[in-house]
Image (tube, rainbow over all chains, first blue to last red; front, side):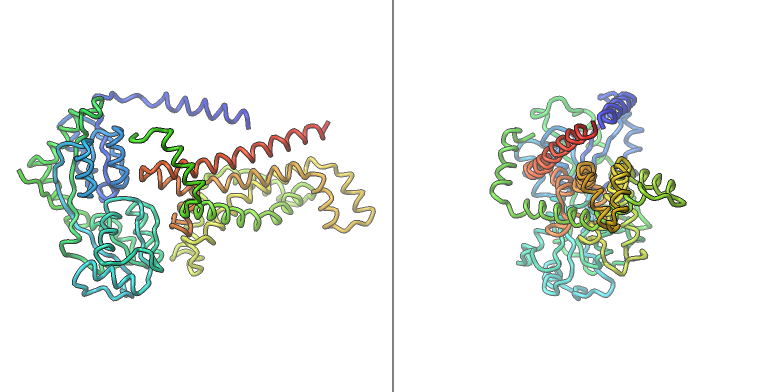
Length: 270
Length: 235
């Protein structure tokens, strides 16, 4: 026992030392949500930006809650998230600056192919949620404070349902994992369309409800306030934010397709 | 950090002592699942350890090597294996055990069995065979003789139990994959810590970490005591 600890320690140190330190100048740390990462959008966009600017972007993909927390703590140079209320607070409290709406996609309600709660043909997302709760079928919630989770809680509130009914399953995981769990448990869930399309081939589920103003999902990119955290790569963060709203960036966002479907609509307005 | 360390620890202790429902449900799930896995695996594993130590049979070396190898398999690999067994398309899909406590218990059984077998085998190998043979000659039944030898080896066997339990109560990979971290059902201490950290809520993560730390301290003391006793006894 005693020796293994030493050997482990030595091995760990060696590993850490062998990773060549990347120059802090050139790295931009971007905290974003699992939906932009899982869909493959960033893998499409970032190489082009990197080739132009010479910066290297490191992506930390978590839920919106954690992404904003990382921004608050000055652990990242900028954030790209999709929870308007939380983002407004983030900017108001002076942690974020220059919020820019860059794109949107939408949420859909997935469920088993036979639609046991009979939500097809509902007139609104709230009505669909009400039917799911009344039927007592499993509803799988991300439960991780992400943008998607916050959106889901808002819909329950609007539907006047306490998310405590039999069948409400809070899993505290990212979007992709939650979809796989929904598939296994053959329940309903709320997901962004991007992750759904990326996982479509693996799922035995259908879009049982889509559309309506409630399910719109706008994304913002927000810089970190230099007054709060002066020692970040603000220049790089600004360059990335500028590129995302440039004609080229916006065009690439709109042209990004997964399995032949457009995922995001570029929305930046001068 | 928007909060100081001191505030966070204060909050964490507050959660623990105010009997916060969510927190104690997590602790309850953790101990319930891990104890169940340990108790189901305990006797068969120890018997196998005994047989491996006391009996010669073809393939014994192979089994021994296998068990020792399995001890060091990462828990995520076991998680993957159990996931593939239990998934809807998997061979045991009809059980519908994926994302349930039963599934978690199965995974943890596979994690703690090799530890129990290997460590009890090592303990039994160190036993005094003469006592065993004398007991049998004097007409003790087989189970009685095994019990007697085990009684002699209380210390090292308890060591095996504690090592196995601490391995499963702290593992996160398999619990996350097979249990799915469902609130009030399969959310245990390690998966909850992973989740709270990813949410940026450190108070609850710290409270849970304190529980594990406390457990580790108790177990280490117990181990230290047992080790001490063993050394005295073997001289």
